[in-house]
Length: 166
View: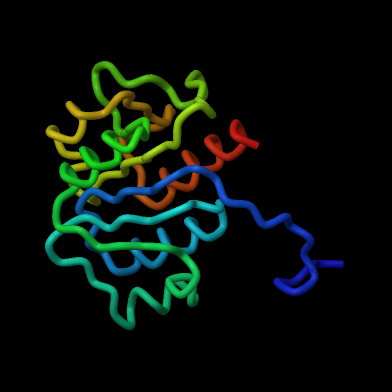
């Protein structure tokens, strides 16, 4: 028998993870970031950028998770990252770079809370944020394309992080 929202027995849990979006501005992607933040027990979602759409299109995709996920909107990703770093977070950017490590080879530490930074739909995580990051991780891909949708990549990263932190 298929389980429903009401009959599933998943244990509710929060993880010491703050998800930071670096200029993600597509309403559907933002709604999906709310949903996966809720699904993976993310402590907080920080939406960074100048024009973050939190209207009807976003709430249609979020399926009311914006009401239960702790979140804030901040114009500056770099300021958020600096603040979190000062508060003891390990800053981990999800981006493909010349020195990024494959996510499946990375050991996520339980010693410090994690700030996972994901990048915008076209340009990824900004260079200034990458320079500030303690670690840069990527998802290995085997096709012709060298990138994937920010929400799909975030799903994979949060799955791996929560798997290791459990």
